[in-house]
Image (cartoon, rainbow, N blue to C red):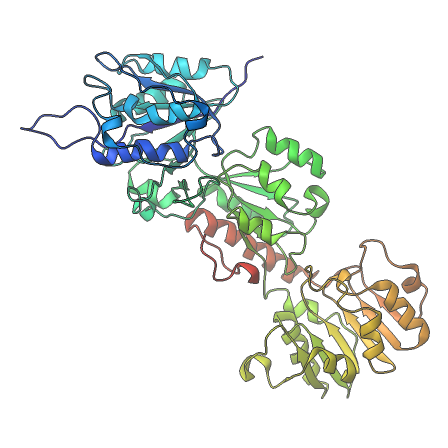
Length: 530
């Protein structure tokens, strides 16, 4: 059964300077460096999975390099002496073959060099006829690359820039549009290639000396070249309820698609089928956890190499493994402030007591503002103390002091491996008798079994919960207790807040496509370079 490979198209390496106004055969020093760099960009450890190489036919005979034994196979981007690569191919039109020769030997692939330079139809036919496995790399002179793409079936007019040698074109079945355009980004040669809006994506793989062997070139950069590009894709996971017009407006800069999956297994299969090819960014709704499960290395591995932005519609982002995303070069953002006011309103209404706030982020600070209206004394514990203006005069105390002195304890911290069960039996033992607990953060930051025991013993007088440890399951010891107020995770469920959150998150999807960056990166990624 024939598969349908992705076809990658590249230009040959740089040419030597003209002599007496005439072209000189072969590659320049920079061209030879590019030939070596391609061993890293498209090599065995890269995600391109090249199994077939096609290069235009030189005018004269080809002298191939001697085959290396496996024990001498190229493993690292070691530079061959120029003498090993020059004078090996005789005649004009040999530059494409020279460019991919080192790579072909690394991969153990015999280059198809039987097609004449001007036979664009023949090159396209050979590329599409390859039955697999793996993908196809075509190396040609830039003036004919456009004709090959047209012969493949790409409907838009594309022109390879005459002043560039680093551009990669990718075409995938049904070969009607360019899936993406990128740069080889070879160190020392393409250090300025990212000036056309870099950062819209980095294809994994490569290693030293380049940690970014491929960069997607964004919309702005392609417009500078005066051509219409195939739109990048943005993916909606879950539903958009209030900001449908804003989502539809993205069609002016991107192709919007929505997953058809209803569970994790289906989502993975959908990704593996190629349905998400070309996706740059994803909008993740509040309800999408039931579709994808935790966003982790397994999901990232099946997403296309263009995928570099994950936009979470919500303040909490615990269903996303940020470390896995960072390792893949995927930026993650949440909605850091819009939900603060609505969430802060869901807590118990005590008066004249000491309010302890565990987690003085946006929601915690909003709780403090509201509590001051009741004349409460505000104390807080945070990873780091806030300045006086940001804290609003709230007193910073140690974690243990917060446990020991709070009449009302409000939990407003994110869920991560360090905060899971941060409140359990030991912490309840440190608290005042008759303490009131309010949790509008995430259920697992508190040990529900320990909470039930503290309620039954009278240590905790009452509690108000908007979130649960095994949501939507609720501990039976909470349901039957008259001193417990339970809400169905409605902290942000006002129309205004829900719409504002969706609009903000969709705005981040737009920034990902147009600017190659996000607003409101999660704290774990602030200050990192992507």
